[in-house]
Image (cartoon, rainbow, N blue to C red; front, side, top):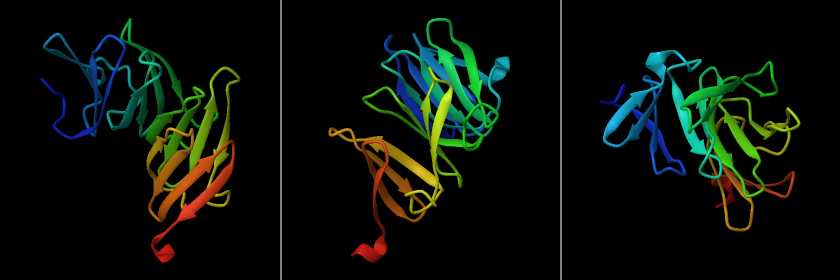
Length: 173
C-alpha cells in the first residue's frame, strides 16, 4: 500500500505508471496493481516530497526538502540529487514545471525560482528582488504560449521569454 496518506502531487510516465509524491513517505510508484516506495529503500534525500513531474514522459523529477531528485523510470533508480551546492537557490524544492523548451523551473519556499540548464550544469535564479512579487513559490504552470505562470504567497506572476515579468496582486482589483 501507500507509504503515507498525505499525497502532494501525482505524475505519469511514458510507460503509463503512476508516480505519487507524499508529504512524509517519499515517493510511491503504482504499477500493475502494486505500490513501490522509494523512501523505504533509502534513495531519497528526504521523505518529504512536495512535487513530482516527468520530462517528456521519461525522466522523473521530484522536489524534496533536501534537493531535486532525478529518477530513471526504466531502472527506478535515483540518478542524481541536485542541491544548493550544485546550482539550486535552495535545497527546499516545492514546485516544478518543465517547459516546452525542456527547461526545468524549480520553485523554492522563500528563495524564489531556479531555472535549470542541466546540460550546462547551471541555473538562472529569480528572487523577489528580481521580478517576483514574493520568493515563496506555491505553484507553477506553462501556458500554450510558452509563458510560465507562478503563484506565490503574494499573488500571481508571469514570465515571458527569458525574464520579462508581469505581476498581479489583490491590489490590482
